[in-house]
Amino acid sequence: MNRIAFLGPPGAGKGTQAAILATELGVPHLATGDLLRTAVAARSPLGLEAEKFMRAGELVPDGLVVDIVADRLGGDHGRSGFLLDGFPRTLAQGVSLDRIAPLDHVVAFEIPEGTLLERLTERRQCPKCGTVYNLKTVPPRVSGRCDRDGTELVSRNDDRPDAVRTRFRAYHEQTQPLVEFYQKRGILRRIDAVGDTATVAARVRAAVVD
Ligand code: AMP
Image: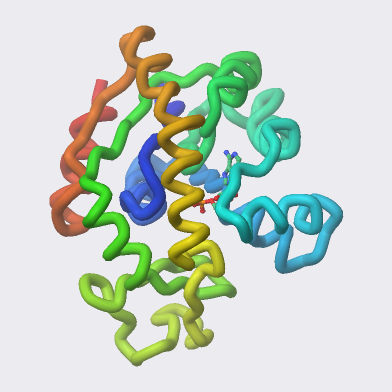
């Protein structure tokens, strides 16, 4: 079964790889960060609650995020597979997910922190469709504009150095314990996330083939 989650620090390339693999497997790609950013942009009650945590680089409280995921994957929705990108991020979320839809594969992206900092500074995103670029390695065709819809690209406001430091700390303290959690269960595969997009995509594919 293709019930998959990606674990990895900020800037590891989870979003880029999730978009590729989800298309290949024909399963929905669920990125909690993107869903939260959409809620913030829409000024919905969820967005207003989440915004202060996100801006600081802190994790949004488990209850809010679990509700979003349960809404999308609860009941029959998650039966035929899905790709979670950015969820679970705490042990409590992992335990909740077991009740909603247990995972078949977890891919842990491994990458040195120096490379991550460089990637986050170069990262630009389309605020409309969510497509992610890297000014050095994956630049848009027209400088500063999204290839898909021509929207002006922006830096995420949590890619600032102070927020990035907080996000790394949140990853080490709250998310990394999940690596062991899934390792014990025998469904974790670690991949080397350094390399160009196609090279890493091949490693990810190999990690989820039964
Ligand atoms: P991302 O786009 O995955 O880097 O997520 C951006 C921000 O959204 C994170 O720094 C958190 O503030 C919040 N977020 C996304 N997913 C989660 C999650 N599973 N649990 C808590 N906060 C999350």
